[in-house]
Length: 80
Image (cartoon, rainbow, N blue to C red; front, side):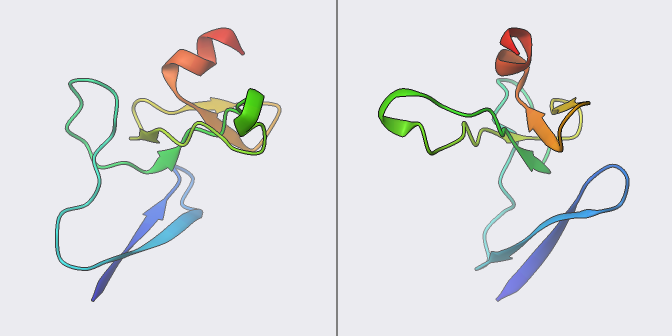
């Protein structure tokens, strides 16, 4: 079993993902073919109030939130 170290642009480790063969997960922005390096941290409401969006994002599509250590997807960044 292999693993992949996913890093932020500043070199810090975001997560270590274990893999069982297969390919790395891709960014979920339509049309993007890059591997993801972050997840959307936008808090959800309603019955999923304790969860976040978790959309997989590559470095080009993640929108860092300057006042917090969070990344938003392009859709949630517009409404933030």
